[in-house]
Length: 256
Image (tube, rainbow, N blue to C red; front, side, top):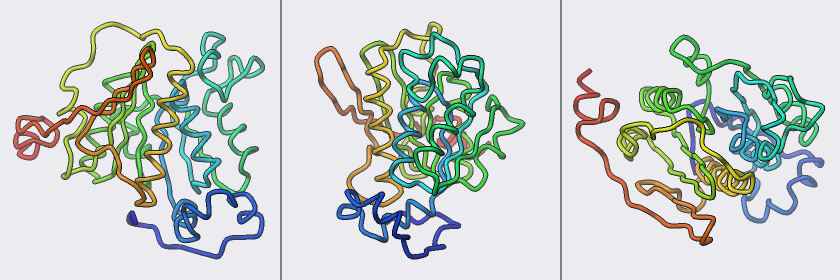
């Protein structure tokens, strides 16, 4: 079972928690559920991916969820960002999301940070976290999150969507390729079109992957890129490997 530094402050599940998690306790066991409760996870992005990711982590009982996003809700978000609604337009996404998540599960802590991830705040964004989840739409921010994950030895789950398609991989620093190994250059073009259901499928896969990383149950998507093709309904696995010349985790990166 995954044990990150700072975990281990366990207590018995309350009666309300036993009732809330009754359908998953036979799968996770009490120790697994307590592990989730003592976990701190950063969801970077409160949009199409971040909404389903945060929703299912909160429902599962992850004890501390930090949501980071600088944007405000716009009507064009509502086809895919399922934690937001018409009354939330012009609110910060992190505040809108936190409100819904806290109503869903009042026994956990939701922390909202309405900031754009940059060099000046990345330590604050990632500080105290056991797992980082990339639900971003900016590759410079993704690469920054990837670099700090490697430096701090924090697992990172990357996901991205476009149209009917999505991708996901789990990065374990010093064990797997990092994001710059797998995607050395950002894709060309601006913000891609996205079907809401695609973001929902891939975001839910990312949440499931997070639960597996935290509890140590099942095989995580290490050393592979999961690629979802919604047009054909296929989920393929593409093997990926480390790049010795990677500026983050390769020989050149370690020397620098």
